[in-house]
Image 1 (spheres, helix red, strand yellow):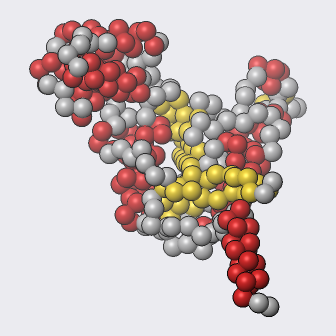
Image 2 (tube, helix red, strand yellow; image 1 turned 180 degrees about the vertical axis):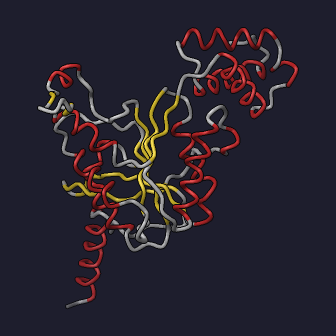
Length: 296
C-alpha cells in the first residue's frame, strides 16, 4: 500500500473516530463531581460521565436551621466514605429548604477522602445499571444524586432505581449509595382512590391496596428519611442575615429595620420563606446597594 493511500485512510479513520462516542469508562476520576449525559453520535445515542466544571458546593456550616438533618446525613456519609455500613437517603419536604444543598455539603466535606458525586436526572434513570457497572471496580466512593425524584405509575425507570437501591447498601464493600430529593414522600402519586381498595381480613387486620404497597416499596428501600419543613419568619431572617454577611454587606445595614422589612416583603411576593428565597433576596439587596440603588 502506497504512503499516500495509507495517510488518506489514516485521516479518514481519525475523522470517523471523532464522530464515535468515547469509551464510557474513560473518565478523569480526580474530578469530584460528574453528570450522566447522553449524546448523539452518527445517529446513535450513547451515555457517558461528564465532569462538572463549576461545582455548586457549600459548607455545611452555612446551611442553617436543619441541624438534625445535617448531623444525620453527614454522619451517614462519613460512614460510607470509611467503608462502614451506610444507608441510602431520601430527603423530602419544603422546596428551597436545603435538601440539595446538604448533599452538595457532603461532597465538599469528603471529596478529598475519595467521595465522588454523580448526578443523574430523571430522564436517564434507565441508565443506572450502566453507571453502576462503570464505577463498580473503582476505589472511590460514589453518591448517585437524583434531584427532584418522582415517578408516575408504571414508569420503567422506577424498576431501574429499585434494582440499584436493592444492591447499593454499603455493607459488603459496595462503593455506591443513592441520595435523592423529592417533594413526594413515597416518590409516586398518591390518590384518594387508592385507599378505597384497602380491605380488612377476617381477623380485622387492614391490608393496604396493591397500589399503596407499590408506592411504599420504593421509598422503604431508603434506610434514612429526612423531612424538611417551611422556615419560620425568624429562621428566614437568620438565613437572610447569613447570606448578606457572605456577600459582604455592611453589618449595620444588614441588621437595619428597612432591610428586615424588605426581606419580608420579598418573601411575601414569592409566597415562600425558604432558604432559596433568602439567598435570592440577599443577592438582589447586595447588588442594588453596590449600585447605589434602594433595596428590592
